[in-house]
Image (cartoon, rainbow, N blue to C red; front, top):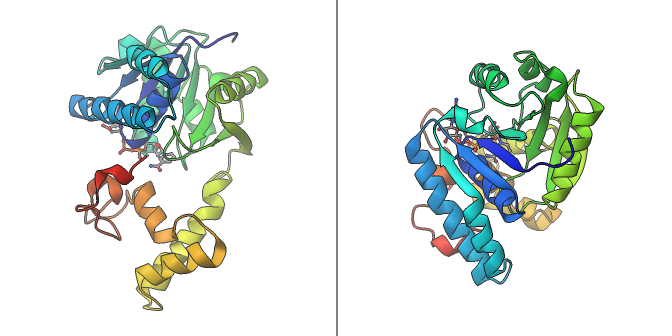
Length: 266
Ligand code: NAI
């Protein structure tokens, strides 16, 4: 694939909205799709305020910001992605739902289009098996928040071709990111190492070894991590918690964020 001119991002939540913002800020037309129109209007306003914040901090020029806002489109209709050169899927972390989406996408998008998934844990090989183009399916794992974090973990499925890998790497570099490459194993590289630490932090809290604040302070000042593991878990999102305390995105997780000043967000 010579040059990506239009990207379709699917899922307008925490990650998808950030990925759409990032691509638009790098001069690429982007169409953001979600099944939920309310999610799209929330994404639209959070992207605008994030871009305005970057301008006010002199991290983005006025012309780049206004160009980025013009490059963004929002839709609930999958057919609007039929002209995309590259799709980045960032919907709910469910293998069944993702496979059904990939099956539909395979029928709708150009035969040359690459289908990338931002999944944190689902096998790329298994997602690819629901399409007729497994050689054009790849993992493109952004870190949160995508406009700020410098890393993309590229995950090769069993059938991912060298051309698809090269095109995904080139796109990641165009978005200003550093790339690491993982084979298709559970947790890939970053989460494979990070999640045992977060689990241990919860177990430390559960067994009353220390308070949540002391666990986080210990890891911040003791190992030079910018965020403690419990704070980080809230930031990532605790999507398997029954009580709905999913972390920052719901205003409450291990910590309560409901009274936090809005200006601290990036
Ligand atoms: P989220 O819950 O904030 O957003 C998911 C969005 O997908 C929602 O707006 C929902 O309406 C939409 N959606 C669900 N099914 C859909 C479908 N069939 N078609 C279109 N839209 C659909 O989730 P978040 O945190 O943005 O995560 C998305 C993906 O990114 C997951 O696969 C997750 O594992 C991965 N990820 C998350 C990171 C994080 O820190 N939150 C970091 C890296 C990857």
